[in-house]
Image 1 (spheres, one colour):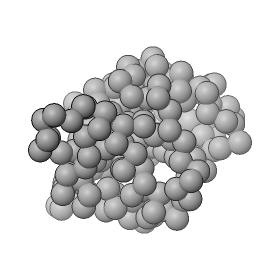
Image 2 (spheres, rainbow, N blue to C red; image 1 turned 180 degrees about the vertical axis):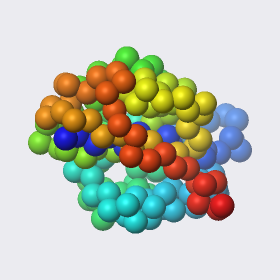
Image 3 (cartoon, helix red, strand yellow; image 1 turned 180 degrees about the horizontal axis):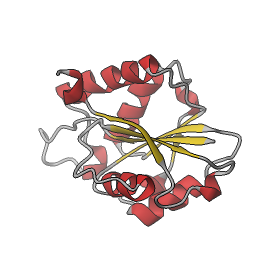
Length: 165
């Protein structure tokens, strides 16, 4: 079995309009929410074999916060340029490229691609994966190459505002 966690980056800052999109940092809420979501994953006994992230600053920082809470070595986070600005087909290609020795992977990236990806893989109807939202899908496969559309079973979907309820 393979388990994929699709995590949209935490809330980013628009304070400096001169920054390129790629360089936008997390804002105060994002810096608060990413560790909280990491703690949620710990409470669900998530122990990823791999964290792979977009190299954009807000995604990198989200991945680092998650890694810290999960006791995942930050030096082992893989940054894939292909995740940044990818649509669902490009993201599926990224999933297919994952090393099969890893059974549980967290992918950190961006919308709209991540919401569409979660819906396609899990045959879901999520209108929007909010910032720092996480969709966890199980696939009854032995290889990442066999991860296919509509074959993911939803384990859970959560986001920071759900933790406030």
